[in-house]
Length: 135
Image (cartoon, rainbow, N blue to C red; front, side, top):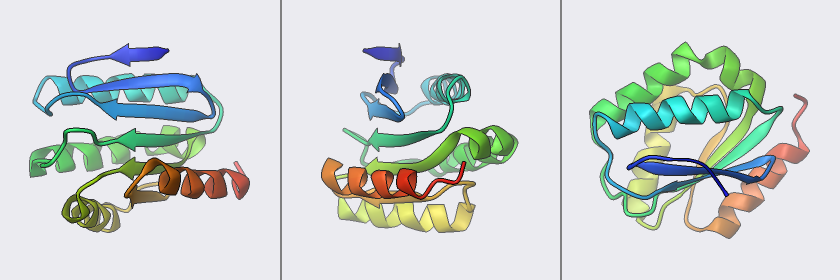
C-alpha cells in the first residue's frame, strides 16, 4: 500500500515502523522537492520509524539535490530527530554507495544512514538501530 506516489519515488507505510521508499523515476526540480515534502508528512505523523530506500534506477544524484537534501535535513532536524531512528539506502552500484556514504559523512545527518548493497544488509542495519533506540 503506497502512502504516496510521485514521479520520483513511492513511499509505503504498510510495514511500520519500517517506511519503504522506492525510487521509480528520475530526479528533477519538481519531483524531488515534492518527494521530500511527502516524506516529511509521512514520518512526522508516526512515532519512531526506520526508512529503507531503494535507489532503483538511480545511477547519478546531481549535487544540487545533495545540497537540497542537506538543507532539508537541517531545516527539519527537530522533526527528524523525533521520528527517524535510521535510514538505509539500497544501491546496486558500489561507486554510488561509496559516494553516498561520503555525502553522509559530510552532511552529518541527525540519524545514522548506511548505503547497503541489498535489502538483507539494509534490514540488518535497521533492525539493530531499532533495537538500540532510546527514542
